[in-house]
Image (cartoon, rainbow, N blue to C red; front, side, top):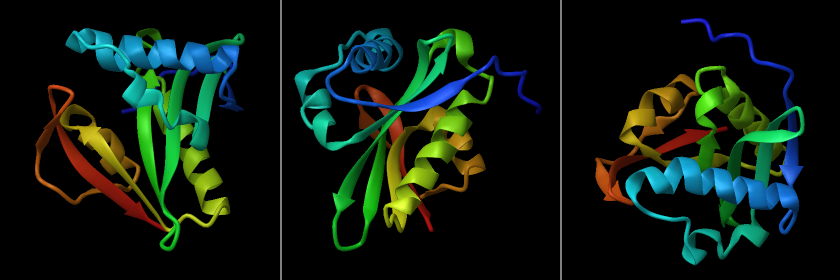
Length: 152
């Protein structure tokens, strides 16, 4: 299925702290936590200063974000975390573009493997990007998830 045309999008890294980081936390909370009756917690953000945060912007407004954390120095493993796309921008391919940008960035920093905990409802999205399931279903933040990975 073809994606609708995406309005002019800029992709940029977000620094911690910054107004863009605050907007990313608000987006993460609104998309990933509040619909579950939860809130983005201090545990969710405690290591954000040690991670890369990428944002997708339309007219200088944050409409999507994703984060990546190095999880193993020897094997150059990274974890994708907190992918959030605003409701209005879902279906435009923004998540795909953010992931491709982040993957390219991680590879330029020696990444050999990316892993993530995907909501089961997002498994197909990650499979289309080349990720494969490596675990059974488990519950995280009240929802079924699956661990997925991609090797480079």
